[in-house]
Length: 107
Length: 323
Image (cartoon, rainbow over all chains, first blue to last red; front, side, top):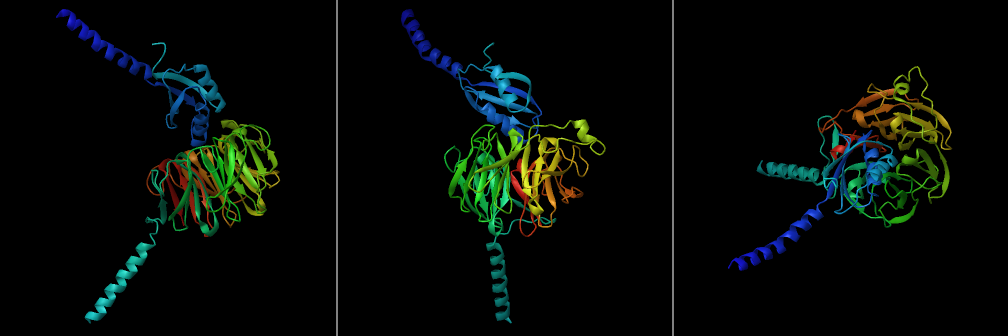
């Protein structure tokens, strides 16, 4: 009886563990960048244009009132902070900070 | 007596029905008309960004985040739309500037695709030109467009910090300007310090043609307007950084009326300012807000043949029209 229970438990785990594992892997990676001088749509559209070129780019939400951009990357993307810095500079701005909102590979 | 009353009621009903059938835009007590609200349907906007007036005072709006151009009658009735997201002919990623020539053809700049597309007055695709780059005829985020009396098209090549001039078929004619920011202190004390940097720019965003085919350029991050001949010769400038009348916090849209007055949208001061061609400040209105007569970041202006001023109220996703 004990063996049957263990087998059932193992079966259940084999079903759920990969699923939960998949969910964890498929979580989007999100960062928020603080950009100096991001005041108007002429700027925010410029930043958006450059950020869209980043590897694994999925979406961006720019808040010109706060001077921030929340960038979402596809799961599994090796997000390069160096590439983000280059994109911000190509858009004509200075990067004031990067904060991981989710999917920080260092954690 | 009853008959007269009956006829009276019928006439009143007919008059009422006729008035409703024309569906005039709502007019508030100050005479301001509002067109549009946030959305994706016909007559709605998601970040309207640029405007131009065509034949019969038809209104063309670059509806930036809906990736389309919308056309309205003079009365503000929705007529048609075209575009859709993409990089194919007739599609847009970020329509950012719009101009209409004497024949009614519509030119649209695409900020993300670095190209200009030309359509007929009904939105039929005619031709396109441009790609990303710094060379002649190439762009880095083109925005404002305007056309002079001989059909030459001027493009504010914003991220290349220059103006480019083309003929009606997209053939390159000339270009001028380089990146030259004016410091805040110099700009603030411009009443006794020369601004300098004549003919250069710090994100030129909108352009318009005044009398004698003079080109007025809204030099956004230098907080000024520069004036050129159609050949690109520098003539004069006005404006500086600030909040007092005549100064700007990011000059954006610009238009000229028949009388030669220059109307400038002042993005971060959330207002519209009026100047004569010499740059003397004449009038201003608006403040930050969502009420009628208030703005949330005006990005473009236009004037029709009746002298009505159209303001693209970007953050409020609407147009405001002033008699």
